[in-house]
Amino acid sequence: MTLFPVVRPVIEAGRELSGREQSARLSRLAREALRVSAERSRVRLGRLLKDESGSPCPTRGTYWSLSHKPECVAAVVSKDRIGIDIEELKPRTESLFSYVAGDEEWGLKDKSWDTFFRYWTAKEATLKVVGTGIGGLKKCRIVSLPDDNHVILDYREQHFLVEQLRYRNHIVSVVKGHNLVVWVVPEM
Image (spheres, one colour):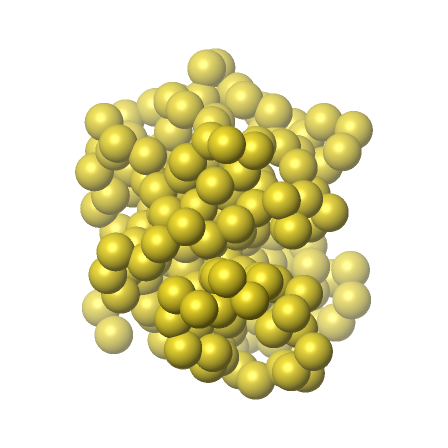
């Protein structure tokens, strides 16, 4: 099966919004990207609902996931449980390094902000697949980084293969599994 994760920049108009209005706008834009992923995947989405924990409910046998930041949105559909996450590459407080990964994981790759966001988005996408919130972060472990665009993780003795894309100073991660990934991004 082929996955079509869609990544889109957020246009300037509307960036002055804040709080709930901004979040609603970004969610709308991410859902538009989701519709493109569904079209490319040749599936018809039904009503997009979330369960009591906020996890997306499958619609018509199709799973979906979306993520958004002020500058970009990302979305994907799949016949299997799916997760996608996007984060802007910008330094944060250094105490987050130990929050996101343990010493063994940091031994796999240099401790940098690029690696931090690779780990963070890969774990977040994986936790979306298993339906666990950020509270499951420490149980989700980086096993290896086969190359600059893939991460293998373990969550409760189950392995997950994540593919990553760099786009406009962001890292996007999607749980790939055994699927082919064809990124849908506008020309830069």
